[in-house]
Image 1 (cartoon, one colour):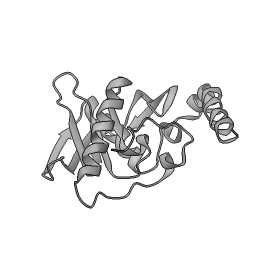
Image 2 (image 1 turned 30 degrees about the horizontal axis):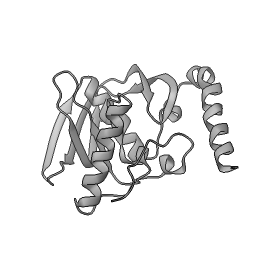
Image 3 (image 1 turned 180 degrees about the vertical axis):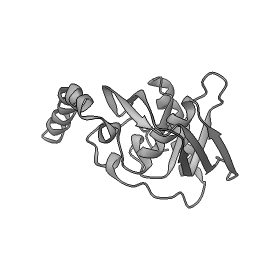
Image 4 (image 1 turned 45 degrees about the vertical axis):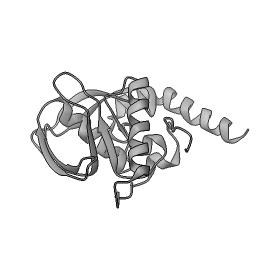
Length: 172
């Protein structure tokens, strides 16, 4: 059995890659989803994408919150509409970094579940924002790419600290 995967943080290169589509739902996918579920729970995440565990495949999951059940999204596609709105976001791969991110308010998502069944959901609520955030990970986009200049300035030190930590890890 392969070792359990853990969260990767910026500037890990996998976070900048466009993830590959899932060709088949097999043991690899099921093990990955189990690791994603575990890490999201350990870190109290609302959602998590496969690249955040070092796997460049098009899978994310949202954790059950409020009335929403946990859901797995494989090869998701988004349709966005509505007036863009600012809302505070954080990211498990960018610890201690938060920013107001502008996103469309109406989201329609189509994906496969863990059994290979296609489903479509629509949201103009918080969960639609989570879908967009996790989908960004599949595209190699992070919240630091969507920050307004003032937020980039406010988070500059925290971002630099993550980058320095990664450099010192590589230097060992």
